[in-house]
Length: 368
Image 1 (tube, rainbow, N blue to C red):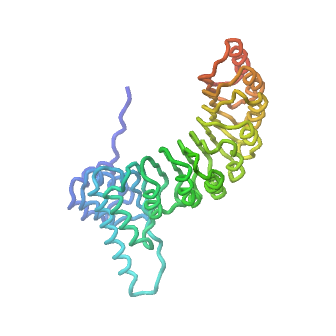
Image 2 (image 1 turned 90 degrees about the vertical axis):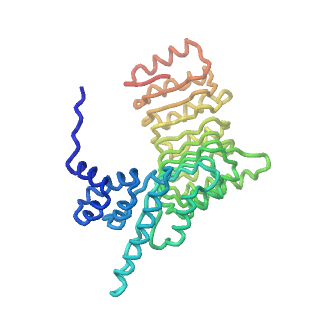
Image 3 (image 1 turned 135 degrees about the vertical axis):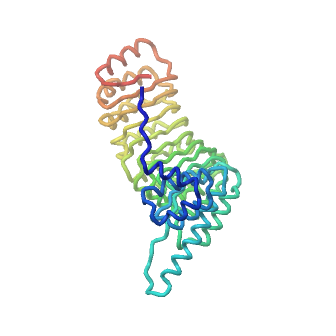
């Protein structure tokens, strides 16, 4: 039977305060700084507009973290926050007017952006107009960006208002053409602190100028100084030119996924020679057909990551028995390996028994 942790006195005080707008407004001057974030969230979700406005004007921090609140269906609380910020900015300007000019840091507003509509909704339109007039005094920061159905032109309108060097995670979960990715590339190049990048279903038409657009995208990796995890699902444009992307990488990757696409034997060779994969913890090549590749290629690739590899996914790769046999010795050297998936490959019971005999020395492994 689990024992529920009783709420702290501070939490109880906050729960009581948020129900009384007038009480909060009069108590803000004496309110513990520790209470502000939780009380702000309670007021936001409860749509206590007066409390929100008063709290923003008395906000004791240089950052205001709105997180995913921008995506909530009720825009009233967010509009109240922005209106209160306007009052706060006017107060700051007036308070420093008589004396010498003392530079002050812009207020940072942190949000999460999930761009999933074809058009800009009412609040996003309102926010962009509001930010356009206050660029000097307010910085809009976003650590996580997720893009679904929104056209790239609207994506660019939104991101032009955001401090792109704050971005740490970017996910594109929508079908883009290579030309669309090329338009997005200049913005990606400004996201110097991105740690996790996920792109899915980037298609290429026969009419597109592939080489020029591939370079427009891959060259931006030169500016991603903190990239750790790279996930590329269905990147049809990489076939035969994976080396163009690999040579622009600036960091040692933790996780690399290139899935559900065609690669050449030369691509896999370049991957095995890439210094940026030497400390990989996760490698996912599921859906990459390898039937016609030399058995040595996969062996050499796994040799480069054997010391650190924890997860290996080779599902639906049409691996032959000779290819699997060639990697058995190196698999037994992967001392950190915890998960190895081979689903969807047609292999005999005999070769599977050999595989099991090679990995029995690995501790806590999971074989799928």
